[in-house]
Length: 456
Figure 1 (cartoon, rainbow, N blue to C red):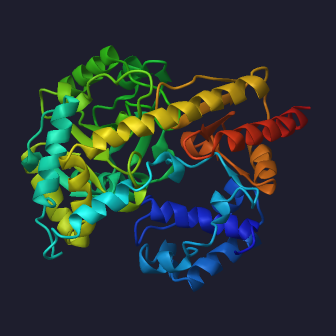
Figure 2 (tube, rainbow, N blue to C red):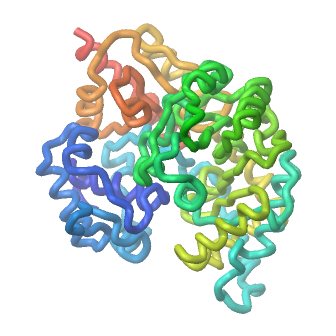
């Protein structure tokens, strides 16, 4: 097993962004200075991490562009440890406690489920050629049926299968929106950490939130009639705050956007991770003007490695995006699409979600107890009704950068709030979906010690 060093932690984090689809091949990664600041390490540490990734063939330096993602398939797989080797970021023996990952731990999944599905497919596959432009037809039918059962009726011809939700965003941004557009989004927002729209010359306009989600009056105040744009929103279990947009607020947003011809991108990848009660109807289901493009995914609920997501929208829009996707990659993996179709088409997915919710509820309950035991006097937070994330704000003014540096040195990972706000923040994002209850407890207990020291 490779040693747990600061450069390895940086390198593994970069690999995770690529593996999860956040940085596509050809995408420019943050500069050495930015990475050094984010991880509170010397630039020499970042340089060592990048050299390691260059040797592995994962990134490359391009004159005039900086360091870009060279490959996210074979080179990335070759750099990962073999099955019997323990990954340092997932190892309890290594001392790493990961409170940053926005995904489910492997032990949340029922044993043998995926193997059962693959076994059922083994006698059905005759060939694995390129699929239709919109994706494997049985999968499009299964997604349409699943969304209809959810309360969002769509037809298979209104679905485009994409390689994860991130590719969906990239296709929409590059294929439908104009350079220089204003993108309105919740503040804080996931978009500040992925730079998809900024990389295409678009500006981000943060809109304030409350306990019901994005505030309509603030959107109205910041809306600019002279600039083209779109609203990007995560209405269910928002990343990073965990807020659920209320049904009344959804109707307000739909009404405003329809009246002002402001298109909406609804990122609904956390919808099925509800724990207390099912979410309100999707924006897409209530849209009567064809104003909403809907993004769904199996990455947060089933497997990030399948790289299966979809866009639901008006057929002419889906046709255009399908053309762009074919130009980009000739289609999502045929095998992954068949696996996903088997899950969705046979009702296995809904049964699987029941298991996931029970496991995630236990983790949320344990996380809540840990926070109340150790941080109730120095921080405030709202326990979400689902999803993975707790947005925690410190009551005193402390350096999140220094806290992050102390945590990394001790092998504890979390996300500083600044990567979601684009500036200074007194908040951090914690995830209870990945670390076990004992790890979460230990991480929070040790974190309190540094918080108190930094506040003096």
